[in-house]
Image 1 (cartoon, helix red, strand yellow):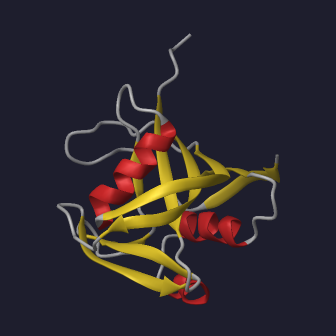
Image 2 (image 1 turned 60 degrees about the vertical axis):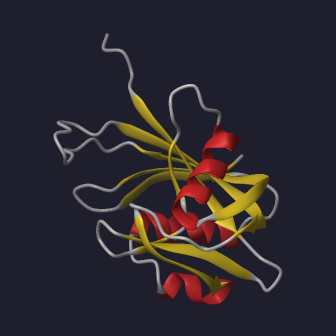
Length: 161
């Protein structure tokens, strides 16, 4: 049996008192996304999402609650020398801003607050749109979804837990 390998990542839906959501624009492809990324070795999920939000936007946050767990079970050829990108497991959290100032990073070229209803007009990736919709639909139960992004986006299963 081959030992399983998963990338673990966390995303942050940072919302302010004006019902706006924090978005960052990626340098790699110029798309708008909510901040997040891979959890580092020895790092827990909460610290990881706080770090990712700070690195990508300059904002300091606290984590409120978990809204979704998502598995991208597609494996595909990567970039930058990565032969195969393994299964990814993403944990999405609602976060509250507690300080900091907007800054960009080597991963982001822009940062802004976007009214909650306008976010889907800016996010183009189907997987991110699906995860954002789960955030909008959150009613106390965590969303779980299994999907693939390659060769095209397809939801394999979904439920609340």
